[in-house]
Structures are given as C-alpha cells and as structure tokens.
Image (tube, rainbow, N blue to C red):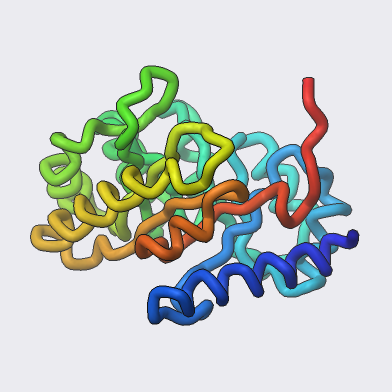
Amino acid sequence: MSVAVRLEEVRGRIAAAAERVGRTGADVALVAVSKGFPADVVAQAVAAGAAELGENRVQELREKAIALPAGVRWHFIGHLQTNKARQVVEMASLIHSVDRPALAEELARRARVAGVTQDVLIEVNVSGEATKHGVEPAAAVAFAEQVAALSPLSLRGLMTMAPLSSDPEDSRPYFVELRELRDRVVEVVPTATELSMGMTRDFEVGIEEGATLVRIGEAIFGPRARG
C-alpha cells in the first residue's frame, strides 16, 4: 500500500473518530511522524498533502527540513536536551516536549535571540512511568504559569504519551486525565487549548477524548526497521 493511500486511510479514521463525539476531522491536526523514514519516503506524504511533520531527533529534523519542500510545518516531539534548544527554535513551529524549567528558559532565550515567538506544549507524564519524560500532573498548572511568563514563548497546550498496550482502550483514562488537566491550565493560561495525544495505536481514542493534535507514523509510512 502506498504512502498516499495510507495517509488517506488515516484521514478517514480521524474524521470517523471525530464524528463519533460530535466533532469534525478539521478539529484535529494530523502530525505525520517521519522519524526513521528517509526523506524520499516522507516526500511522498508531503506530495499527498501532509503539511505537518514530526521528528524526535534534532539531527534528523535538520536533515529533512533541508531536503523537503519549504512550507512544511515541523513539530519537534522528542525529548529535547537543553544544549540543542537553539537548533530546534530555528526550525520547529511547535515543540511538544517542554518538561523542565531549564529547557523552557533556554528556549525563551534562544527565541529572543532569533527574534521569533516560539509555540510550545508542556509534556505531562500522566502515567507516572519512570521511563517517560514529562512533568508530574500535580505540578503542571504551576509549570504552565511559569512557561507562559517566559516571553517570547507561547504556551499552546499539553502533550502526553499513554503506556504501551495492545488495547487502545487502555489509553483512555490517561487521555481523560490530560484533558481535565488542560481544562485547569486554560483557567490560568487561556491560550493553552491544544491537546497532543494519540499515536498509531490509540489516536482514535485520543480524538474521542479531545485531542487536537495526533502524532501518527507507522499507519502512514509503514513499519519502521527494528534494531
């Protein structure tokens, strides 16, 4: 199956999931996660209309941003080391993974130097797993206020990853928790309305629970090489 066909299939599934809860597919931005796939394969998705691409490694983001057409909106979705903040500010329209004060402060400093407003999401570790990054839910509202005060950062919302499971329904309580947390954050930071939650295995559940951004890789590009 071609990338273009897979992409169209995913769009149909997004629309169907949104309609089940009284939303429309237009309410949900599809971020095609291109990590691990070569630029020529990713270019097929761009040619088929994918306008938003996600990467989780700085070097891969840089290489593909150079190789692929201008006009693509890049998302940085991986854990970000503070010393690489400058490189991401130069390229990413939205950074999904702000998870600590030092990173937020460095991103703000680099954005000031570059003369840009940098849109960011706070990553929240709703599952409490030690292997995942993100702020604890109990600290998220206070951290949101802290990030929002760092000009020229613009806090747009929250992101999370549910624990790995073969059953998409297992992700639902974590997505509900993030949505409820977002509602509390919006009371102090009205711009923070976005919810980045849901991947290939569980994006339909994410949409049913209010996701405004879904991060989908293998359902579009096929299985990644392992090992």
